[in-house]
Image (cartoon, helix red, strand yellow):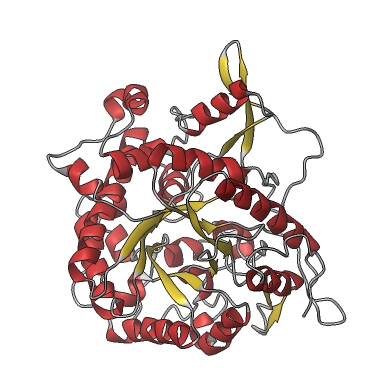
Length: 459
């Protein structure tokens, strides 16, 4: 069965992971420039200073994106490239780069989906407290307004924050991502509240400054839990755990409801308030109304999930069977996550969905015939898309799918050892080589999903 006729097929990237050119356009250092400059923070001391050098390979990369036949490209905008001081005057040179990017997409018939924040805020704002400073919500809204002023005559699809669970959980709680902090639970909960407030203020800024009617969403990542079998009690166990804060005493951030309930419903979940007690964030008058400004779609970043069943003690997560397939990142391969994740989120929040990230890290290299076979990526994607199609058939309102990622890139603390791309990047020569999965995904898009079982790519 085909996907819906108006289904959006796309690919995704983020600014710091591909752009390079970290000292051009007046760009200031971001928290990631600071973090990856410290020996030991990133695998083999890799940095994002060059990354894929996308800034200098823009036309080539746009041609490769267009060669897939995608209808949309999700990218993020670098806050320190656009507004080097973090506030005040934007950089015309930085905005000019995104002008060229957007114009190049539109000239190729590709709709831009712009993400305003994918973890790379200016170091100057971190020096003023970063997400711990309540003023960051206003700084973010000011930055959003500058971007929308420049691009909204052509860009209508906007996302505010990418994965607050990660930039809070890894950046501020366990310290493995920039800015590398290990805050108390109380401090991290307050920082998360400021991030949600920034989202709400950015929604207002987008609507106030947009020159064409905007469609606004966000792109979180959270626990994806699926039933271990088809028994009703297992389904209820998975649903309950999807909407539970499962590690309140440790790295609490990897959950759905603490972030999504305020945005959709205008309140924090009661179980979280009880779990966190005196550590719950300080909420000022009007905050929840600001956070819960209406959004038009809900982005879902889903890579894997965990199985659950019901016991006499209640819902519990199960261990995987020995030998369950895993990606190079050691994430379990669980296609059913792309059925149950969208289904549970849609049932609770009743907001149209996009799969804004899905993909895998694998060990790809250029073979002697100059090809890059990656059959695991093809099989993974086919299995996940089949489950997504099943969710759509069962009434889940999924509007599109963005494969992560278009290019191999700087994978944060893992440096360049994790390859997620449909296109191989030689980081010494910067040569791009489409992988077999690139040609296979092109067939999938051209057939609107009817070629999922065609595992042999055709160049």
